[in-house]
Structures are given as C-alpha cells and as structure tokens.
Length: 110
Image (tube, rainbow, N blue to C red; front, side, top):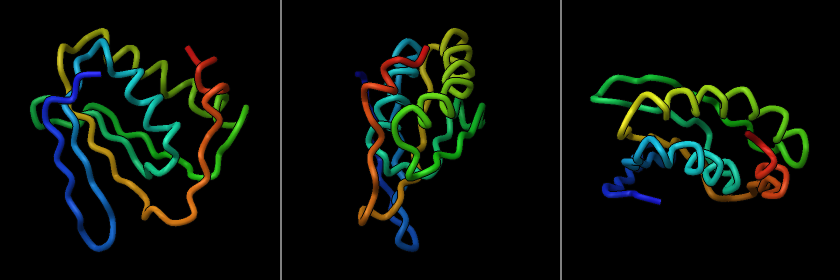
C-alpha cells in the first residue's frame, strides 16, 4: 500500500489522519480502515476538494458490516477508476473499547 504522506492531527480528543493513496489502492485501503474498526468517518479528497465522505459505524461486525459497506465500496471503486492519487482523511474514534469487524466478511465485498 502506498502511503507517501502520513499526517496525524489531534483535536479535542479526536484523531485525524491523512494518507496519500494511489487510485488503484483506494478500495484496499478503505477495507483495511474498516477492518481496524476505529474510524468514525472516511473522506476522499483530490486537490483539496472532497469527492466523498463515508460515515463508519462502530460496532458493525460480521455479515452486517459486509452488507452495509457494499454500496460505499462500489462508489469508492468508481472514484478509484477516475483518479490517479487521492488523500484519504480518517477521523478516528478514541482507542478505548472499539469492536473490530470480521476481516473474512469484508474480504467478500466487491
């Protein structure tokens, strides 16, 4: 996974991270972030302009996560086909008490 620039910003107890990702790696990166289970919101940014924002719902596990994230991942795949490099901005939950999603179910997504 290409992450050339990693910026983490702490503000009011929330964590924000920005990662530059090649378009071809975008879907895999988002799947990875969903597996981690502590992202509150993921934004896809190109040249300072927000192309899409996806709220992540903590606590979705198993097949519920697979069903819920199928449509957003299809939209992310469409964006990835049109761009060469984007910035993914991740707003993270505080690290305490986060449930993680099943990686097997997320691998079944398109």
